[in-house]
Image (tube, rainbow, N blue to C red; front, side):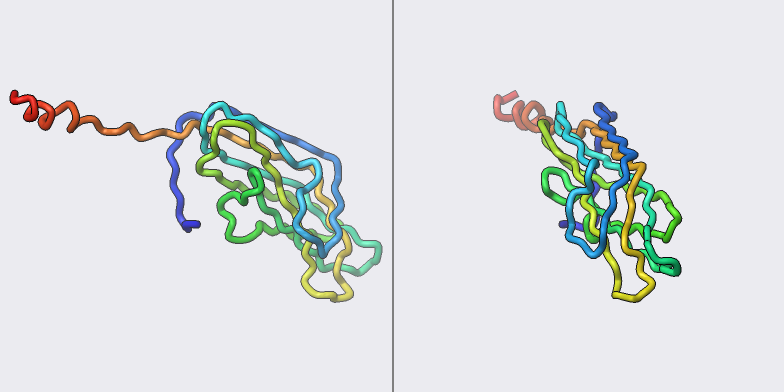
Length: 173
């Protein structure tokens, strides 16, 4: 996929939103899986540019005093099983021990066809190494997923030559 993509769109015609305060616990290391309670199924009326924004509060939990190295929560976005741009690598949130922090990120789908789609946030818990100070769990709460759908602007085909000089020349005018 190209590094730079630019798409023009009109006004935002549809908005979809999900909020979820239920905590989700992730134990690293793990495999990439949909983050529970963070999927939107939507129906687009027209082909659209999608602007997908996600934010959450992330913190680390440990049962042992003195563990200070938090794992990372790696996040990606998928629409219908296809990763959203930018998708060169995951967005990482550091799970601080006992302290929460919020972080947001925005992905773009440059062309989503009219119809039904599933938007999912994919999460993976990552621990770097096996140091004794690593925190065992990541807790994710206060999740917000918002999808803005804007009608894609279509370029009009030029009809200048079909109605202009050349068609007049053909008819002998």
